[in-house]
Amino acid sequence: MVFRNYLLLFLALSTTSCADMLADILGRSKARKSTNLTFEEIRWLQLEDPTCVSSGTSVPLSSVTAHLWNGSAIQEVSIPLKGIVNSDGSLGSANVEGSILGVETAQTCTVSSTSNVDCKSVSTGKEDGSGGLKICRSNGKYSRTSIEGMALTAHSLLEESFGFYDSLVGRKDGLAKAFILAQLKSRKDYSLPDGRKRTLFESDNAGYLGASDDETHVSFHLYPASTVEFVKSGVNLWEVPFVMRHEFAHHVFDHYTGGGMALHGFTKSVRYGSKPHSILPTGHRRPAGLQLTEESKSQMALDGINEAFADIYAYFQGDGSSTALKGVSCLTSSRDPGSSLTKGGRVKGLTALAVSTYEGVTPAAEASDCYEPVFDGEHDIAVALGYPLAQFIKAANAGGDSKSHSRVLLAWASRIDSLLTTNVSPISLDTLVRELILALKTDLAKDVTGACPALKAQITGLPLATAACQ
Image 1 (cartoon, rainbow, N blue to C red):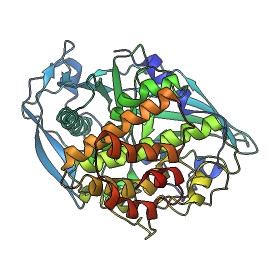
Image 2 (cartoon, rainbow, N blue to C red; image 1 turned 180 degrees about the vertical axis):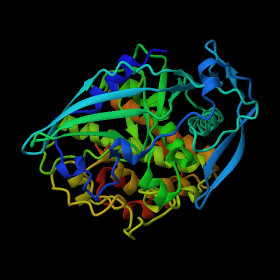
Image 3 (tube, helix red, strand yellow; image 1 turned 30 degrees about the vertical axis):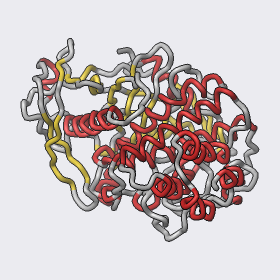
């Protein structure tokens, strides 16, 4: 599979000229978790069995050892994984074609005297990587500090997610297979106003990128962890089941809504969302005072709902347990759809002020940390809506299990695609949340009466949605 054009598209979509705080680039901002670090600040993992990768051939597997975070410590867990030996000797499985090593992307960025940042993608010649990961150990066991341990943990979690999706009644067929980009090296070379140069790499994140029309696979991105973050938390994001389930849920959302979004002009792909998504913000926040166009507001609404959908899907796939989020920086209770409060004790929900801020009408406040939403980015919508919407689904779908609740999410995604396709009304957070309520009431014939009072109290900034909830 050729990744070059695919990743250059990813970079082009993910960068625009925007006013960003110079402090973020210099690593001085404490409001958001820094995901852009120098080479020396990152824990770069190495292959534990380089001879296997360079000259060996993978062996068939029936299980692998995954390193999973349980909320307080890492556990070694044997997970069933039927390995497939690809034609190049690399390891694949039923839905995850393999892990690509050595992928590098780069951008050159100019910072103006007014702190405007303008980035352009440049070729590294390594967008296709150095080849697929090979596994020569029949027990599939590697250290968690190795690239093999990283890739196999994510591989097993993603294959598990494909299996969960396949178990859902009424699912939409044709969900594309995937590749993993293991330890993706994403570099940005900054030219600062005073003439200095600074090179940073993305870290402490996990991402998903849908395919363009000429691609047959999506990709899941595993970024390296920083030394400081690992010492502080003791966990890598690819070891957190919720994180990988969240990224997989973006694949599900795009599978359902990609056609509608393309028709509506929000993507360049008929089949997929063609927009990168990550579990945490990448550090580039919306500039203060930026006036959003109606198209921008619609895109932001879709992005915010996409993040909320992914959190709720991950929560249901995990049987409504968020234990593994404990102790995970910038996630924990704030991104837990089972918690009514953020880490700082703020009640979750979406007020009119929050919506006004998200739509660029009201200036966003300075963020105090990475846990409390200020509504200048799509992940804040996940914080605000994850709990109210997840609990509404559980209450309105009383007696349902995790698969039944997840089926509600699929019905919601179908309605969103129909809304985008017919374009019967402006796209907003309000209209998109309303579609969830209508999916339960109309498509699934659920009595939402008893579940509505709590939801209405929590989403006071969404009048159309609350009007539909009765």
